[in-house]
Image (tube, rainbow, N blue to C red; front, side, top):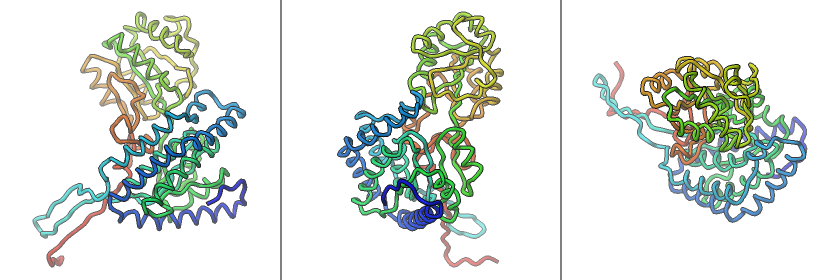
Length: 428
């Protein structure tokens, strides 16, 4: 499929319909393919990524130049940028997915009701066709493609316009590996145009696509939620919190907070709001502030936080609901764990939130009270990642509650069916 610079809207509709038809046919074949060819395809794809690293980096340099011209933020440039280490990490990630146990065909449960003697098993099966819509991060092309193949699903990928050339170069490697291993040619497809109309048409393909996975900012998620005729695994913004309880180990708290905010400010697991107990804020907040400022972080806080440290600028109501994806953090002084939980549940995005505490009762209250997909004790929120969870990779962090929540790995990309065996039974 060639890359098209422009295309009429009616042709985009036809393009997307054809991709849907091809994907559905590929999905039906993939569902019956055993584990070994899928593993071989991903090993071949990883090899292609390494062999074509220079091509990928050249394409990425083209995207980076265009992004700088558009004035994209430093954090977003970091999400877009590739280097030899990141290409190698992509290839290693694809291999890690290849080495995972096959999630398809697992017997999840088996029983025989006494009253009819039927042998009933619940067995995992692929979801079918997965549409992934993502922004900026070209490595999602490799991660999503690998996970869909491993779980026996066909994929239609729609990367962001900023990463178009990078994603296309990565996709070409994934597609070459799939063909080399004899898997269906259309097991993975990438939309070859940047026109936003393609997304609209994709969201109408309910006859062909089983689930949409959106990864991006508020505007993208809002549009997809409003327009989609297809169920979603929502990957909402990462408005993550780190709460420093009165019982926190001070040295650990400083290190963890700085890592949670500043390791990579543009990822969804970066902490955007720090909550700290009033009983320790006077002595510990200046240490945290000093460490963050030394890393180049701007501090915004409530009146109590400002009174403690003069480097903290006034926070507005908007700050508590902002995913900065930048070297900015909001700080609020709270009176205990219950107020921290209430703040998180009110302003958070149900993604990832952490408590730093040595008190078991406070930890239990936090874990039970915070309504998020990932809740962490005494560690950085930047561990919100399928790879760090031992899943090999993830297709996103689901902030919803239906079917999948938290990191969506290969197991979460399966459904199940019931297999019923009888010996001649008829129902009275």
